[in-house]
Image (cartoon, rainbow, N blue to C red; front, side, top):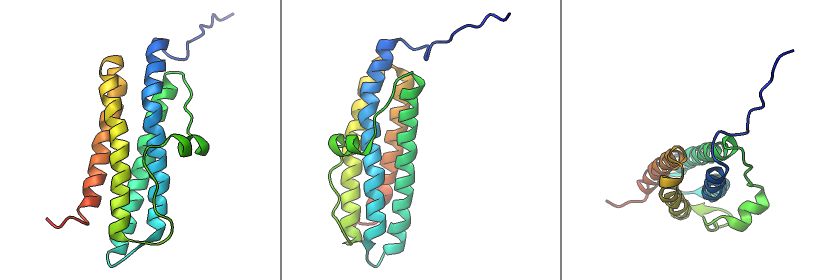
Length: 162
């Protein structure tokens, strides 16, 4: 007979895992909202630079989904669940509301930048809170911040006069 060892769900201290989940949960919620709302913007953008903005918004959507997946999988790897059901996202997201219907590119870009800025507040809070709690999880938050800042820059470049 073979001796089997039962492995715990995670090698991380349960209190640390819980803290990480509490910090990264809002990040996943905001990134999920950003991805859904940016897709709404993608479908409804209008204007002379439609194609470039339309395609860039697809990149923002894909990146937000990837960042959300990375943060959620970090929590799951620590043995805890994450709640990003649509009801939870609608209730807890800090990213604001996108305008309904067709919008000019400048309006769409400004609204998506505003949503990115709100998500960045949540992500920067995570970076600060995870510094002492769990440096590995902090690295996840830092990478998300870097990516969101790049997406913001690309969008802003479409409306910046200088």
